[in-house]
Image (tube, rainbow, N blue to C red; front, top):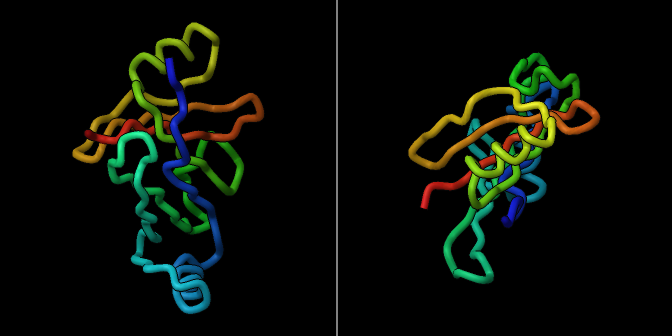
Length: 124
């Protein structure tokens, strides 16, 4: 089973997300919104459109808990349900239940050092 197919997003805490968004917009040309920015690209094998989300969070955010780190990576996956079943069998900490939205399915896990990781199966 193919597991991770790419990076779906990079999320990090900062003192002032609005100022960070504006800095990246001004100096690096990011097309930012209050939710950061989305980088669009095409998958090599299928030619289908994909996105990678970049998003600064306030340093007071609890979204990354139970990790105490200031960042979280989102990985794109092909088959989230099967992957979560496999990870459970291997003893990986699954933080929450799979949730579905119009843009895909999500779940959070912890790696061996307690970093919270978001797994995302994009809607097709």
